[in-house]
Length: 327
Ligand code: C5P
Image (tube, rainbow, N blue to C red):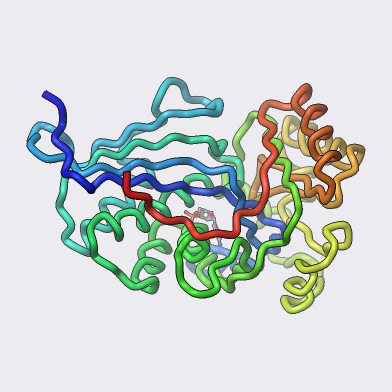
């Protein structure tokens, strides 16, 4: 028997990825997290999520979730990765039910185009889009504050995607992010740039990267740099003069695995040789990005990089809000 689907209760929503143009990390806090100062940029490369309300079946789990991958999954295979309960979308559904009492049986399909464990926030974005879709699907009209509180429970990067993807005033494609990741000031995304993403084919563990940074620093924070005002103002200037950096990059290049050292040296060297205006590492890796102001240079760069690296994607900043679309 086919599942009976309530008319009008099936939604599709995108979950875009991000890069960190800038990422400074403070010392470890007493709660185990680190204060960050970061510039996040949302990109058009996105996962897609479908949410459908299912009626008339009692033999189904209350949230039947399946994942399909468009990208190679390190250590995984087939159409799923891990147990469904470990998926952040499943966790978002459970949290939303607990807070709102929403009890409909759901079928969720997740199509992953964002490489996992790559510093692009794919899982975090899936979690944020799930909250936005559920708020529409359930007709709960929760405030952005209530959704942000739930987002912070799901992970440090989730509030950014929630805030940038909402339709509130000032929704932008970029943000100055501080605190553990929950303090967000939306910014306009740079216009007319192309972003080339290169993932070397391995994932990089976030807790492991933070622990390595702590070990290397032994309590001494990174050096002084430009303050928030100067960093934010620089986003409106030419990428070739951006004063941005990522605290994880020198540490991973000095103390990371042999594969990580070779990959980051190779990819970032390629971006320099290919005429990128700016390049760096996103989050805790392993994805590197190059910023190009010239479309042709970016396209020629992609052709070259595809012969050398596992995952190469040409994309651009996404300025518009992410809305759940009724199917
Ligand atoms: O919040 P999330 O689950 O994404 O964080 C994963 C891990 O990354 C944390 O357990 C912590 O080790 C590290 N982290 C951190 N400081 C942050 C964000 C993440 O130390 N601001």
